[in-house]
Length: 372
Image (tube, rainbow, N blue to C red; front, side):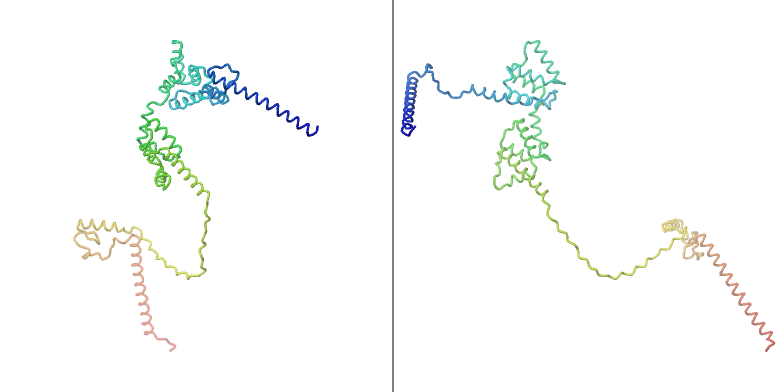
């Protein structure tokens, strides 16, 4: 096929497409004129796309929720401390799997299946007996059952308890993290019905640790307003996170420590002469203690006795006993007697020697030696 034949074939194809386009154009024009002439009729075989309707969205969301497998609630034994958590789990499951419940009674019966022990079991048993007598559940909607459940299984006087806690210092942060403190503070404010504003911000600041509260209050830029509780929540969380990050950085960074070696001088110093120690004499046995002497003198003063010999009628200055015999022990007296006897023996020996020498001299004078 040469070039002229190809060109003719393309021209014929383009002509056919033009004919089809003209036909479609005329059809659309006829359709528009028909709609303008009869806007309420639906005789036309063509339908215009309509805007999305709210009735279709739940079907689409239901189809999406059918692919989600939420965790069922845990078994509930009737403890008031766990009542709010069980109720929240049930409502979350129902909201995600609403297509599985045909009516309100199905939701209530489904919740009964997780109330199997202790007070919860007794409550369900009582409700089922009433249902048999009445022929239907005593609750017409899930809302009625929820109100009854809160009355039986949730903490009593939640609002009063929340207000009491907020008016005391028990809600303060203490050693908890800022996030834990914020979570509890939000719950208390919600249960107490305080709302928001300056009073709530003041209570929040009062409960914060002083270090974080001062850091937020002294911010030069970006300081939250005194009546914006959400801004205070965000600022407190940010300050606490920065504090923890800085603490971790300081713990990981160890600055090198320089050790200074002291200089040593090898200089020999003269050793001082040892100081002679004075030996304390061994006290004699049975020597009166000064306290005993004082006691004896006190007794002698009262009885007007001599301080030396202890006899009445005179004083120590006129005592005939010159030697204080009270200060001699039995051993001392024996030694003194032996010394006196030895002294007597020595004196006698000296006298005897002197007498013998004298006799020898006399004999020498009376009898001269014959050899002379």
